[in-house]
Length: 107
Image 1 (cartoon, rainbow, N blue to C red):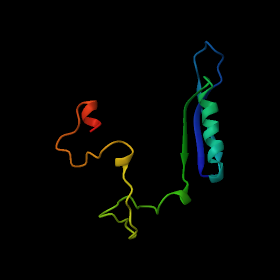
Image 2 (spheres, helix red, strand yellow):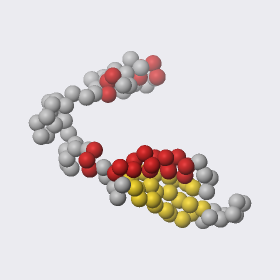
Image 3 (tube, helix red, strand yellow):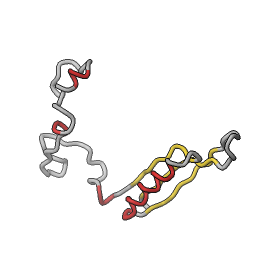
């Protein structure tokens, strides 16, 4: 089990004070699609609240403790060139002041 869906369930009849009970559903690494689908189902039911998903997909992430890229290299020496600049507009890394208006954010 490395994927868990957590949520609160209310078994009280409609109109009565809710009594939220914590619940969890375990899934394997290979069941990510099923876990996401279950989240959608739970969120669609008003008897459930605070539906979240947590995972430890160890084969999908880098080594533990590796969180930095310096000079275009990961700590283990691999080249790393990915950037958000193409997804969300121009980088503001070198901006003198943070943007204040939406127009400034889109530059």
